[in-house]
Length: 108
Image (cartoon, rainbow, N blue to C red; front, side, top):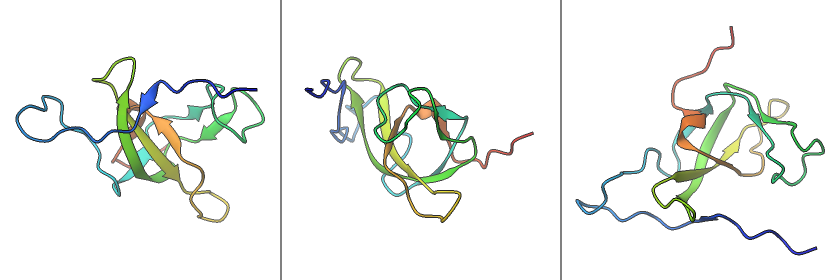
């Protein structure tokens, strides 16, 4: 079965005054999931197509970033989150900026 064509490309944005939308997070930045992150069907290794990938408040690190091919102004971040069981980093997850925060999320 052929892989679906990706709608994102991983190109570092230009810096300087010509870049109107500076990136929000850099590679190596520690971030937290701002909300529960569910599989949209594109996450390999998750049995449930709509299963929970990362709970709100999970800590991760930005490992790469780029922009959507469909909307070049839309940032996409690859983040590896810590496993709650052993603290090891999991597979990278592609996220939008509003799904991330640098504030620790506390579940009520």
